Length: 100
Image 1 (tube, one colour):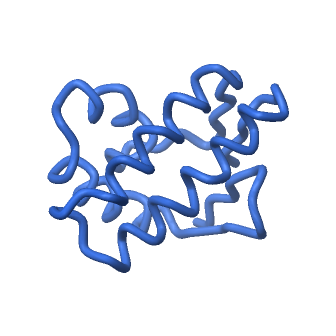
Image 2: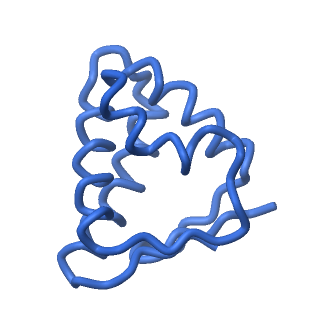
C-alpha cells in the first residue's frame, strides 16, 4: 500500500518504508519527541491521517531534528527531512497536512 503525503513533491512511500523509518526515528529521537510522532511511524498506520497545521509544524521540526541526529543513517535522514519539509509547508500555509 502506498502512502501519499501532501504538501510535497509527489511523495508516496510504502507502509513498510514508513514503519522502517519509524524504527530509525525511535532510535534517533528523545522519547518525548518520539511519542509525538509515533502514531504516524510505528507501523500501525491508519488509512488516512489529517493533521492540523499547528501539529504539522511541530512534527516537521521533530523530523528535522531526527534527520540531523548523528544516530540517523544518511539515507533515512534524507527521507525524514523530505517528510519534515512537507509538514513545514503545510504548517506555513496553515493547511491540514494529509496522509492518505
